Image 1 (cartoon, one colour):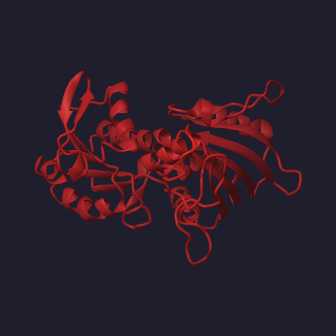
Image 2 (cartoon, rainbow, N blue to C red):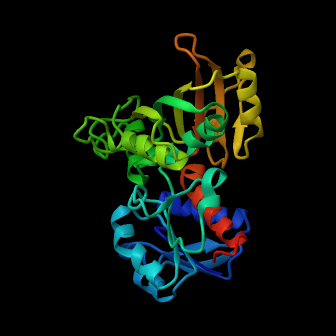
Length: 329
């Protein structure tokens, strides 16, 4: 089993390395790649030192699986080349997510649709993953007709430079500008770039990817994505309308039984999901589950997950584990 990681020095790439060790991922050879400026850097994995190599040198090794986490431009340039030499690509960028010939996978939901022919597999957007983890089991039971979601997204979703901006602003230095405005003690209703329809690309990802993963294009979805000065993960306020009358007790039971979800919901004891406690966790946390008294067959809930873990690295590694378990690689 030969595994390669592209973008290993980035925030998601570093989490991938940690998770491979923690999950005791079955590999015999590991190749770590990043941009040319990172070539030669040393990274520790299982008490061994690995040197970062170029993408081209990784390509020559023909790894069995390659985890891409270096942005859509790199994925568009290299993913097909790797798949042509027999590697299975699990891509964390937006490059292939809405390609009708590529599968968009959250293992707990739709890994069963994978087969040996799949050579480029897309990892969904971080905020989409935690959303559909909660939505899908409820959709199976009650059939969702409409979703209104507002996200409150960590600066880590933008990358290391955004985190640096937050830290610098905390110290009173406002010279670093990844965002158009300060993020410290501020909230920006602006994640990714604005599209022609006045929604941001992050909001459109939530809308389009959710429909594809749940395989239901009749669901009405609207989204507002907000950047907040938080490190531990993304939070989402979600209003769901069902075609069938939901029962709150049953919704609790469904979510309690769903693998990968932890219900934190006890208002009397101030127990609810928060990024402070979701940080570096692999599960999706849900709470504040309650009826929407203003609209028929509707509920509200609150979802939190670490966007670098389940929102990116964990989900990608789970896909790889599924491929190995089912002997697709």
